[in-house]
Length: 221
Image 1 (tube, rainbow, N blue to C red):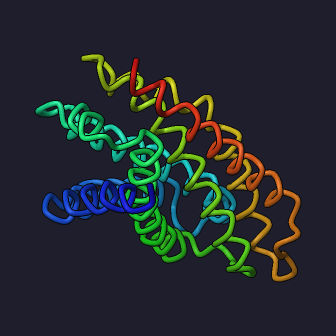
Image 2: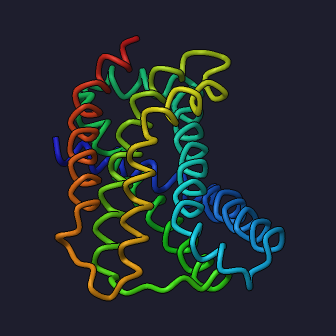
């Protein structure tokens, strides 16, 4: 299963390498949103530093939905997903492979967006460890649930427009918890025992389990 999951992940990463959608479209979109907020609200305003954590995760969530929708749009072309199943690849391996490839793209997006947040809004950052762990847990949660709903909606012509409506309400607790982790990480005394980190980690583990269990039935539907 690990070898097949790696093959699926490698396929998705090669597609991204040749198309460069994340580099040429998604990351510029995220930075454009941050710049828009910066110019609209004035980067000198203390309000920007206060809303930066929430803004960061909202931008990441919407940008990730584009990556998820595109991943299944590629699979839908020439019935590629059916080909993977007919080849004998277990849905769990497909899920793990696609999640790994998506997580890599999301983490790159988050690193660039976080740099943009720091440069534009200058929020204090006291605990990089808390930021990193909460970002990883939130990334796995967003990717897991996004893949399940992406598989469910991929067969519909309006699936890409439905995906945000289906996913955003489910992922709201993750976005809120991850934003609270960033807010707590602004204090130098914050650490891995932060209560919000426990919440985002629990949600991350639960959503990962739900995604792993639900991806196969979602693909069949």
